[in-house]
Length: 260
Length: 260
DNA sequence: AAGTGGTCTAGACCACTTT
DNA sequence: AAGTGGTCTAGACCACTTC
Image (cartoon, rainbow over all chains, first blue to last red; front, side):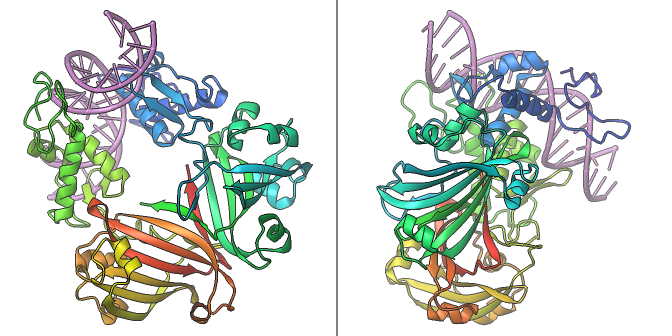
């Protein structure tokens, strides 16, 4: 935001550069720009699927060079928060779109192509959140939560049974009907109807035995080995907004992971 | 490797830029530089843990600007092939070093800190590779392979039982004694003793029931739910060099994964 | 002081898309 | 033709490490 000659202490938008004295909150310019862009994403100034201003435009707005804006967007792109398209522009990432749909679903068929799963909503209820749920979602004990139970079918075969816990305050008008009639990934609905984008998640996996209830739902024997998957999803600002407890049938599917 | 005025068709080290006519193998300069650096890594010109030439030096060597070298190294760094250290230089990644050790091991204790696991080598044998193994390792059917069986203990508790299949041609002098006396991660030994670096891997997970053999090894009941993990590891050039079939006990541990 | 990676700028040109 | 992201250069200065 200032030529190289005038050293750092210029008028920074977020934090200023540190030089002589102690400057505990220093961060490079492009990180500050990245934070500003993320604020605009979070605030909804640019919505999922939309075009954000061009690099040149952003450089003018923030009074930095295009290269600096570029480096900021590079990182946002690496984190899947935006998508670049040469000649067209940079778009806000969205859970609609085939390309990135189901990017959190790592269950693959052992042989053949992955097809789009079908859903059956079993139940949607609102209740005062159990302690383990409110603790993970970082809300007050006893606060309202929504619990969705559903089955997912792969090629007609019931393969995933899950409980999805959401903060009631955010997901107000969520009903079984609304969920049932919605086509496409659930995160797409969360995004457009409730303004909540899932941008990151962590999963914990364990092998467990199917109990009677899940055995019946998933059409496997009681005591069959199944994969227990607990997922916590986060939106902007590292805020947890979903706890998902799932059982995957891994007889003819597997959980796929890439390490590097 | 040429000023901007002279367009692309200059003297490129790998591929030349495409312009007028059809140029099927075009790739940007920094990708070509990246490929050259990777060749030097693969050939052992710079060995794991060593310092590679500085950006300025590489820029001179390849006759490009420092920025272009920088972008090439950026990608190598993102792929964990090299590690940058400000003020010191850029180092070839290594499986020794606490920071990156066990980076392919995603099994975490449900509570508490992860401690370094202990190994017990059960068996090391050489044999003509079974079809499923040679197919995955991309070697000829019946070629010699090494099979290592071992148990890993977490805080003294047997938790992982695995079979590790390696191409016999690469791992010639591998013996049970050599493995047993070696401290630290096995990939470290592979790296220094056999010049083979694992740089990427894919895993497939399934929930299964413990059979008699593994139940005895892992001190669990026959029919207990355990996690089956099949890993294929790759070295430079996408060459598969390890097939690992493991059973993880997930009673008080879980497989941890980050999604984004 | 010298060398390394890290940040920032300014400007040129290329490849792709839309008008 | 105009606009967008993608590549490349050249040069300045900063932060960190070592001598």
